[in-house]
Image 1 (cartoon, rainbow, N blue to C red):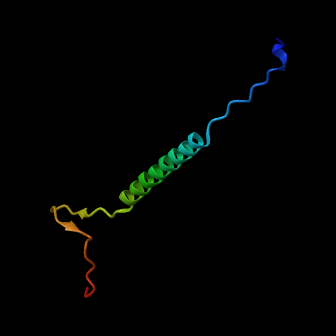
Image 2 (spheres, rainbow, N blue to C red):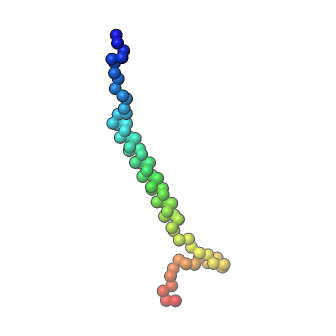
Image 3 (spheres, helix red, strand yellow):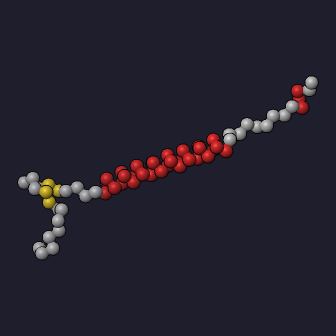
Length: 65
């Protein structure tokens, strides 16, 4: 029996395994984007200013002043 004539096909992951990996990567990327967007919105929120008397200022614009 000649062993040199036996050829094996290279092993490749199945299509389902590839697709599952792609879906997992997409979900991970979307989760990171959502987390980044949440951080950005938290950073852009205006914090109220408290004066020396403890009163909160800067919430309402007085148009008549």
